[in-house]
Amino acid sequence: MLAARRLPTAAVASARVARTYASAATGSASAQVSSTKQGVRVATYDDLASPAAGLSVVLNAGARHESSESLGYAHYLKNFAFQASNKRTPFRIAREAELQGGLLYGDLSRESISYRARFLREDWAYFTEVLAEVVTSPKFAHYALPEVRAHVQAESAAALADPQVAMMEALHRVAFRTGLGNSLYATATSGVSADAIRHYQLANLAGLTVVGHGVEHASLVAAVERAFEGFDLAPVPTSVATKYHGGNAHLDAPAAVASGNAICALAFSASAADRPAARALRYLLGGESHVKWSHGQSPLAKVAQQHGAEVRGLNLEYSDASLVGFVTHAPAGNIRSAVHDLSAELRKVASGDVSTEALQRALATARFEAADSVDSIDARLTKIGEDVAASGKSVSVAESIAAIAEVKSSDVVNLAKRLVKSRPSLAAAGNPHDLPYADELGF
Amino acid sequence: MSLNRIFAAGQSVLHSVLRPFSGAFANAAGYRRLGLRYDDLLIEETDAMQEAIRRLPEAEQVARAYRFRRAFQLSLTHSELPKEQWTKPNEDIRYLTPILEEVEREFAERSAFEHMAIRK
Image (cartoon, rainbow over all chains, first blue to last red):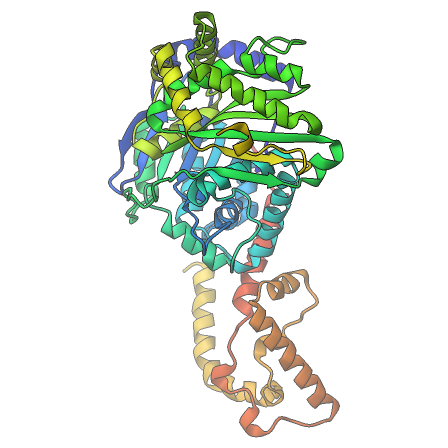
């Protein structure tokens, strides 16, 4: 089965109850990582108590790896997933997965493309074989391209019709220009053909990672070794180091203009070393409410309320960069004053005005989010895949939580100080007369 | 010897006997005089064939359409191409048959999945 599938609510509830003990026992475990003789890194997370398992094959072929000649190819490559391989037709792949009750899907991020499967654990050998086949012997038939192109164009149109998505793409564009600034959605592509996508895939095959969830480590390593026989996939440092630029991007999003609302994202660059402090700062600023029918007690939420706005903190983490700031949407007339006052809250943190209670609340939320955000097979596959692809090792939830717990008030204040002195990236969508500019905010 | 192997052996004998005459037969069939290829003569009005034609590279599709138009025109005027423009044996390649066979295998596979019984 290829499409996403949702469990009925009752099944979700019972699955959660049934898993409590297993999670408690394994929640602190980090993934076991080893390397095959072809250089494929294999990571497994042992959750052998649950009958559900997952696999993810992670290619370092995300949007950041596109060059000016291959812009948009990552999106095409993702949609070529589970098209014909040299051994199986797409029909056969779909039907065989369906017969075993498994789920196959592709996932594209700025860093990587992953081909994933979720299934009952006893079927792991079959799904390992299929995922490996999708990577090692895809057909990239030219006659499949019209169908793939139709999917790509539909996905791009649907995603970018949402001003929030378009704004986040613009934010990355001004922040990083190329690399991480490349759009996830193929719109302008030069000379895309099935062969061009094949070359893009081959060029980005090295440094492949296979992540298993609930699959026995030694067996998976052996299976991966068999499946990738004859390949040399040792990681090579090809990715160009990310350079942060910053600037303004304003979109005349018709949907946002027509609704009389505007959205704006303001973000600053933080390094990988700032990560725990950045996580704390993001929840110190806060924004979202954790209690129904209330706006929440965080500084950003209080300010946003005065402007009829909604806001949430932003902390986007990539392997060698991150963006910290906030996203807000407000009635168009208020957006400029809202962003002004919200950025004043960041300055307040930079001036050292952080109460102990606020910091404690922020750290508690950040720790909870660090644990909660990876509490599903899919999320764990993503997290472990990202970690291993970036650094060759996996960071357990316990380690991330411990790192956040060690954050002191001075770390957050120093980070905020550096941020407000740096050049921001501002992206906004709405009526261009109402939108704020970074220089008006005093940055 | 299994039936399959007898059949296969028979085929190879048949192949070696008939092979020398195949060129003469193809020439006698006359399609080469109209600039056509053998695969142009395959019946087009089947689902598998339609799919196979769709899978041809665009240049092949255009060349095929051109050969048809030229052949229709020649047929209409009861004439043949000048001899130097006849399809040469080395040009008479099976450009469509491998694709058609692949499509037929896929159709058979689909049919097999549609009609299978699941035993558990």
